Image (cartoon, rainbow, N blue to C red; front, top):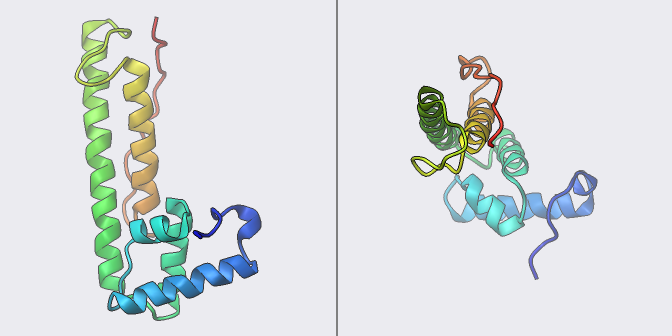
Amino acid sequence: MPPAPLTPDRLGTETDTEDFALAVQLAAQSGGHVSQATLQRRLRIGYRAAAALQDRLLADGHLTGTALAAEREEHRAKALRAHSEATAAMAAYEASGRYDLPRDGWSCYQDAAQAARDALAAARFYTAPGAPQAPNAERPIPTCR
């Protein structure tokens, strides 16, 4: 039976210890690296909890730092590409003056704007401490009519 999803009340509990033990086992089986996606699937946890678990595994010497850094940089680059695509769609909506028509795979301007915000938050999350942050792209969002 899969473990219960990781929630704040589960942190620091026996279940959290079981999650860590399973993560250590997964890291040992994979030769010093277990991806964030694997932790999410196997432990039924979110990406922030999986990233925190990876940090804990790294601190305890169960993961290699280079593989972890490469994975996080890949996630950051993917998030920045998604932000760029969504921002380009927002610019197309703004240029046309119509915010409510589907275009380029987006249902409306708000859809593209939300995707841009989500991608920017993900890029900031995956940015290493001390590294340059992703740009701030907050702007007012017209409503879809």
